Length: 351
Image (cartoon, rainbow, N blue to C red; front, side):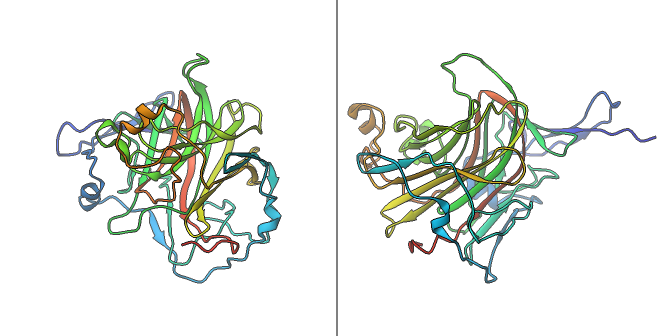
């Protein structure tokens, strides 16, 4: 009789230029483990050009696709106004006539644009992908339901731009997660899940590259958006806040974040969607437009000390080399992550 096994992939910081692969089999009560020692490099272009036999799990869509979307069915743009930034936490059923499913049979909110790029996580072995990384201090373990558990309570899973390709900008970012446990119950430590884009490496050596639009959902079921103009002194207050679900603990939910430029690239539209019951039924839970007036929540002295050359209410219409799936202060399982370059609604025409 063959007993079922799970296996773990542990990624550890590079100690040698050669990879080491160790596999051993244990009884059903234990796991067989695969240890992988990649060479890490913050220079993504170098990493891509030396990716060995790793796959690039991205494709470009060239065929003509149905891009008809009933924009009005997505609900009205709401509610209050923070200076010139419109914000709404709008829970709206999606009744658009556009209905297409992605590689994982997940409903798309917007179609992939013609010539646009799609990326999907390799569910057989996520780290076998030249443009996907989980960091040198992370480990992931395959579960019985074929999802993957990430062990570090501060997860940063990055999808970079393929070599010689345009950076990510107008995107729909999707993933399913299950929160297993909270690491620290201190009320001052956030319990966040967030998909973010429009930035690069976040570290003290390149603070001005650390930009992001951050669409988040908290473990208590509340949602909202933040903007990061530089790392780490350029964060804004959270807008479009709302309580839209019960606790996320020990259950699967789907989370989508959408961002695209409007008004000839002078403003940004941000939306997030929740599949609260893991049934592929998506509800829009935030609807936010940034056209100015959304300021960093720091003093002028601190904000301008970074010398990034950006105003304090910088509108993040720029593209960025990385898309990040982030979680803080929790252990979670994930599956079916994806990033797609989207076709803008007919109402807008910015590229």
